[in-house]
Length: 317
Ligand code: CP
Ligand code: NVA
Image 1: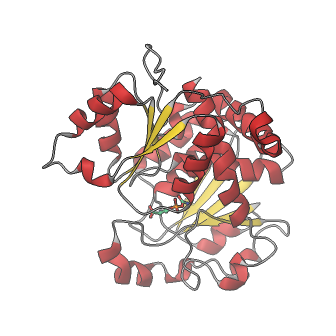
Image 2: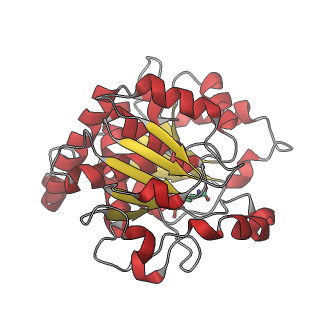
C-alpha cells in the first residue's frame, strides 16, 4: 500500500519538551484508553488509526523494550514497520542527511536510538515531512518518561500533582526526561548524584521554566536526604550504553547510591520502586528491592507499549 505522508511539516518527538503540559496530559489519557481498549484487538477504535502508514525503526544501540513495544504498537495502529539496519548511519557510507532525505520519500516516521541528540536534530533539519521519534539518545529518553508517568498516574489515581519522586544515581538521559515530564505534571523531583554526575545545567533551567503546580527540582549528593518521605524512588544503571570504558570508575563512585531496603525505608510507606530496565541487580538496586511488592518495573515496561501508541497517534494523525 502506498505511504500517505502528510504534505504539512511533520511533528517530532525528540524530547518531552516537544509537548506542552496539556499535550502530555492528553497523551497519558489516551494511553490509558488504549490500554483498556487493547482487549478489543482489531475491533479497537484505533486499530486502523495509522492505516497505510509506514514507520521505520533504526537502532544504533541494543534494545529489548523499545524495539519490541514500537514493533507491536505500530502494528496495532494498522501501520507497517520497516526495520532499518544501523549500518546505514555510518558516515563513510553517505551523509546522514542523505539517509534522511531518502527515508522521507518512503516512510512517514522513523524511530531512532542513537548517540548524540544532535544527530536527531540533523535528521529533522534535512527532512520536513518525516516525523522523528527519539528512542533514546545520550541526552534524553522521552518514550521512557511517558510510560513512567503513565505508571505513576495509575498508582496515584489520576492525581500526580504535589507528589515527590527521588531519582538516585546518574544524572543521565532517563533522569533528564523524567524531570521534564514530572515538572509538567506538577510532580517534584529530588535528584541525588555523586559530584560530577549531576544533571546538565540546561536541564535544571528547563525544569524551572516548565514546572506546573509549584513542582520543584532539588539536587542532592546524599541519597538518604533525597529519599526521605518521597512517593517513588527511581534508579537506572550507573554506566549507560556508550560509557562502558568508565565502568570500573563509575562502580566505585556510585557505590553509596545503591537503592536497597534501608533506602526504601526512608520513603513513604506506600512508595514505589521504579527502574527503566535493564537493571544490574547488586549494583544500582538490590534483588530484594526490585523483587519487592513496591516494585513497578514491569508495569513501566508494559506501559511503554500503550504510552508510545498514544504518542504515535498524537504525532501522526
Ligand atoms: N528501558 C529501555 O529503553 O529498554 P531497552 O533498552 O531494552 O529498549
Ligand atoms: N541510561 C541507560 C538507559 C537504558 C534504557 C542507557 O542509556 O544505557
